[in-house]
Amino acid sequence: MVSKWVGRRGLPRWAGVVQGGGVLLLGQVLGVSALAQTPALPAGERERACWLQHTRDRTQVRLNEPTAVEVVNLRDGDVVRSPFRVDFAIRGMGVIPAGKAHPKAGHHHVLLNTALPLVPGEKIPFNDYHRHFGKGQTGAVLALPPGPHTLRLLFADHDHRPYYVFSPELRITVAGPREGPPLRLNAADGAAGCKAWYQEEQTRPRPEGERALISNLRDGEAVVSPFTLRLAVDGYGVAPKGHGGPGLGHFLLDVRAPDGRLVQALDLGHGATQVVLFLAPGGYQLRLRFVDDSGKRDLVPVSVTAVQVTAQERL
Image (tube, rainbow, N blue to C red; front, side, top):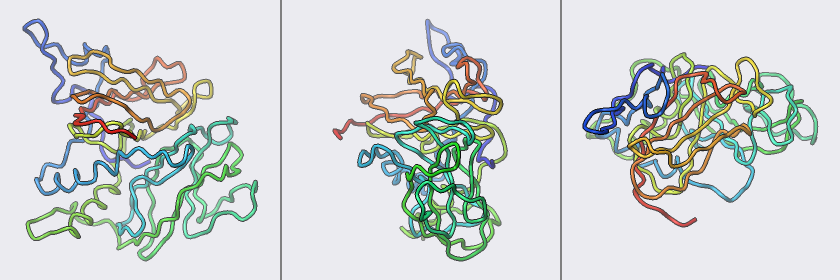
């Protein structure tokens, strides 16, 4: 799958922790040999302000449906350039490749310019209108011709039979091919300019590479608790513990204080690709690992993201 940034082996820019009059490298605090820098907030003042306007929407906790699937980086009516990235999310179930039976896990399908299947229990066909992501992918890059299109996600079991857990249909417009440099905002741009820039930022394909990342937050971003984290992996598929193998793994997430003290440790061995965090106000480091079936071997560099919880709200 195409990806947006290649994780650098080495320490992120804030990876020094003062201890006993000296500096202890964060890699020593966390006990890992390789860390990957999370994408930073946009460098431009206007772009950063535009990005931060949407933080609450990207991290919102949704409890209206205990089991739901959604496209998290697109909204109905968006205008994109092709190729564009589509980020998947599933709540209440795990992800597992096709061919591996599991009562609480499945894999994603993208329905393009077509309706939901009419016959319950019938296998999803293999054609240009039904894109299968049976390797346990957490997202995809689509190349579509200019013009209007519809898409939605449909979650299915090991045999490509729908669970009938599906996302709302999204109507998008492909404006044309992805050419030239990324969009920039200037003083004359208003709300429409911010919207266009944000759509571009959310859907731009990542560079080739293997990495795990928190896809809905940037390094140093401020959030309100509770908040949702969307987890993505490029170059591998997700599978619950006991169902792994070559090219497969699952997520581990540690929440740490700035001095390296462990606050929470979450093992997403059931194949989950998102998690809701309840944290008190303060600064935290989110350490995301993607590990093999044993849970001991890192398949990609550890991703570390700094976040600032500014307030708590009741659900």
